Length: 230
Image 1 (cartoon, helix red, strand yellow):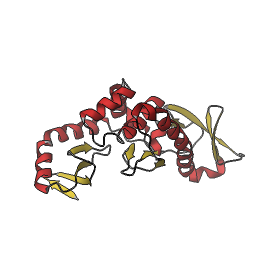
Image 2 (cartoon, rainbow, N blue to C red; image 1 turned 45 degrees about the vertical axis):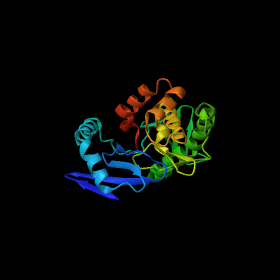
Image 3 (cartoon, rainbow, N blue to C red; image 1 turned 135 degrees about the vertical axis):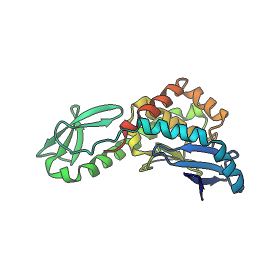
Image 4 (tube, rainbow, N blue to C red; image 1 turned 90 degrees about the vertical axis):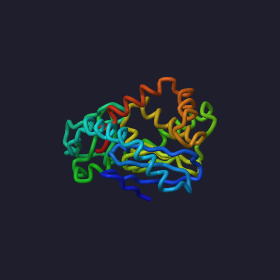
């Protein structure tokens, strides 16, 4: 369902698990309302209208922070991020795999430059999955819940998501973030298994696991755009 109010287009997502209405300004500036199943459209419209000043403020902040990332050229010396660090690329003529991280450098076969992005995305996905599985397992005892499934995929402008069937998903780009910030995403999504919306209870549970979560969250809001894409 989509709502259009003045110049705002809002995607509405319903959930049988949700008891409250929540509005999110996504990383790309799109608007998402998450609401209980069966709520009336008039109630949702009134909710969004009450939030319009807040919405315009957040959109202005995101526009100020958004820095267009130049397209990668896949040339020797170019930097590629992984867990918060930037590693220089070295093109090589011979290698047993198209792409590897070795001795502090990404090494890409010169003959595979044309498929450079595909190889990097595949590499990030392959390394993100075991990393997030370990983090989910690590924090499960403190959270009091463990996801029954962990997947890494392209989630567009979301860092992560929690499925209604007890699984958690992570954007492959999350592995570019510093480890402490990626940890925040892992904890955030897993806590949703206990508290489906961003209620005070939800944030209390996050804080129990990560007492400094606010700093990590603020860092991600201010710097996350610089850790997107290949």
